[in-house]
Length: 355
Image 1 (cartoon, rainbow, N blue to C red):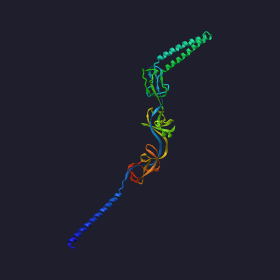
Image 2: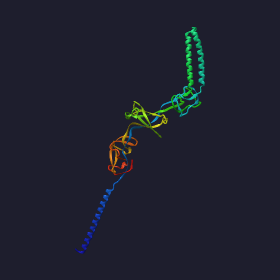
Image 3: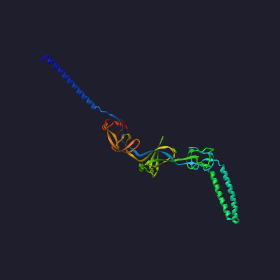
Image 4: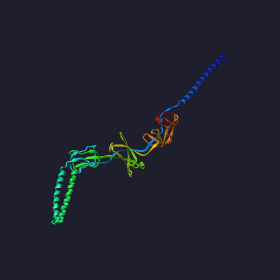
């Protein structure tokens, strides 16, 4: 081998050695990156709460307005000009209390004339009775005069009633909801316009239209809770259930009685009604937002040893904030309440808020 050939051989060996060294280093680096990538685990932050025991009820929710059980439009039975007004809107009144008076001059004059005519006729009857006893007048004359006296007595009673009717009285106990009458206003007995509107508010009613599917669960005496804006809820009872279902709407009228002795509630107020069918004092509960519903089944993510497991559950009653769990998890287990969208079975999680 000459010198030139030997030199080329040395160069080729050096190049091959360098290539093998670089290849080995690249393979080692790739293996190290893969190991590091495998060791990197994504931890998902979630909120969780424990399944606890508590009270929950089965309810049907709807809305209604309060109605007065008794109210009355007060009209006048007499003709006259309004002379005095004794009450105003918002005043409490009792049945029979005078609300206003009309001028009475016409009625007083008519009554005075009637009494005078009756007195004269009675004197005549006394004279004829004596003559009839002595058979100086016929029975026909005597009977006719007696009937005239009876007719005039009835007429005087009507005039006394007309005088009493100039006092406008409350037909029921309640509160003056509206006053329509004004001093100086001419009132006639044939006028259809009311003078006052009286509403009894000690006892109110709330009528709801219950769907046919709910009727089998509703019973007279059942508890209902009524909620009003800015006020605590009021407990009431079902007092009537209509025996007829409206074919058009598929609902039946259910009447709820509301005791209102303190008069805090007013007829016409808007109310949210929770009709309570049943209640459980020791139910297993989880927050409502923990339950995922899909394909007619419900599930929750249960936190165990830093990971989550999706668990199918059987649910019962629901409230605004909680759901009853009948089967699937046990008391004290942690369920995810926020962050479920990023989860799947065996996802690694960090609980950032414990409910």
